[in-house]
Amino acid sequence: MNIKKAQKQVDDWINLHGVRYFDELTNMAQLTEEVGEVASIIARRYGEQSEKITDKNKDLGEELADVLFVLLCIANQTGINLQSSFDLKLKIKTKRDKKRHKNNPKLKI
Image (tube, rainbow, N blue to C red; front, top):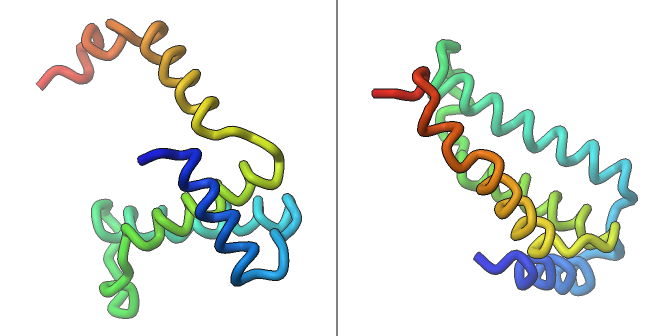
């Protein structure tokens, strides 16, 4: 996925179908709400909580896409090039964690 292209797609959608971006605090609250929905599905579907009958048809992929959409909105409205930030973070993590996880005895199968 090209993040820069995804940011443009979200911006185009906002300009075509929305009035404007919600303010940053509203989008932060939206992001928190969407992450909560993902957490709820994970806890019930893959964790030990029982799944409610009304939640059995919830689509995890759709909820993750909601998280991504709001995240891209926040990046757009705060002037963040998320592609550049992601690429840099991946380099940092690669350098920092190059052997860390492979040497972690807790992760051995």
